[in-house]
Length: 117
Image (cartoon, rainbow, N blue to C red; front, top):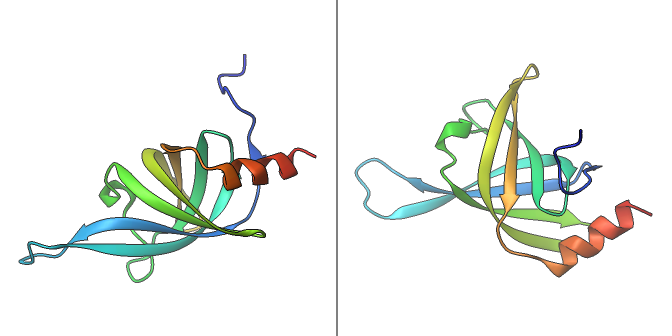
């Protein structure tokens, strides 16, 4: 029995994940961007591969609950407000991180329709 409400589409799309990041001793919050790529897409979620190394990556447990994802679609950049669902370490020193889409985005949904054709 399929547990997903929406079909998933395999797609490799460059993206960035913006995470609120607090520096020790600094009361102001800063935004840190991590570059990655999508693994698959659906109408309500995005699975992204992020590096796990200390320099360019991130520890998934430090992502917090909400992030901003920017996808570099062929038609332009799309920003999605998302919340963390789960993460799984991959054998390639990367992390597969799944985010639920919080706010609808017409440009994103239009891109999904092109993947089903």
